[in-house]
Image 1 (cartoon, rainbow, N blue to C red):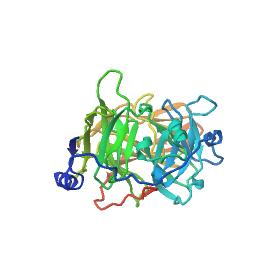
Image 2 (cartoon, rainbow, N blue to C red):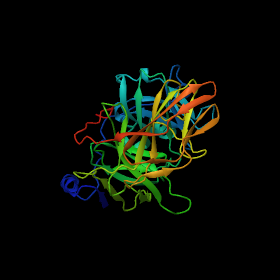
Image 3 (cartoon, rainbow, N blue to C red):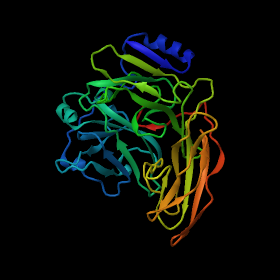
Image 4 (cartoon, one colour):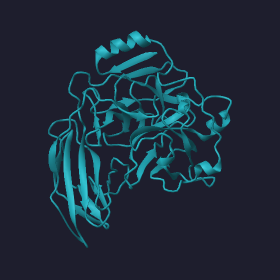
Length: 375
């Protein structure tokens, strides 16, 4: 197996001592089993559900909270066929032992494979074709939304082989630092197969790996990169059974983390829903995964800020209320900086002061990421 390592060479040396140069069982694998028989009722939206999952893939999926070996099957999501909606809600209060707020990784296996295995074999990480990070707060009445990536290889024939040596969640984003979310790895997860279909054009994917954790002081995500792939890297899925290259992410080590996104706190003090955009028609999703910020609420929007200290210029940013655009003029956002945008007013008259820089985020070196269902 070939290995490509990004980040600290000191951490790489430790990795080679543990894993050598060949394949090894996943550190997040296990011998436990999960028995699931999926029924029509498992596809139904749950009353009071705040977590909405939309399936952009071309197969029906069984969903798990945390490692599937722990047995946290929460239901299924369809494709729009067979009477099974491609988007449905889940009631977080039904997940046994889930804390009042925090993070977890949602994992998806194909409906067909899970039903084939039933009680005969275990559902493990090897059966998982998608994983995504969910940030939640049960006390918040607002919904959380998450889209399952459309390009996953539902037949598990081609994949990217990754290892995350860091204490952070590793997320892959497509085409831009604020692009669609392809997959995540839990902290210290090794030999993870990210099942992804090759592009029809034959070209590689441009992916932006990001490290993230939930800041316990602010309740917001901290998302950063390092100098190896702050501008993205090309990744090409390889066929199952071929000589795979293992790509190892060792993190920024002792060096300064590199940001390539800025964080926009949008405070909606109006009486209407608000949508934030960086260019005409380019509406952004907030950290809850929704396009809307409700009246009286503050949401954080991550936007591409480039990779240099000077930042990135936006000339057509603004927000929409009641289908009318309110431009905020030319704005420069710098990587790692937090900005505030406050909108006030009612009845078609609104005021705002543009973006205000409130400082730069910093990364806690000794942070512990508490993901439900991973241990």
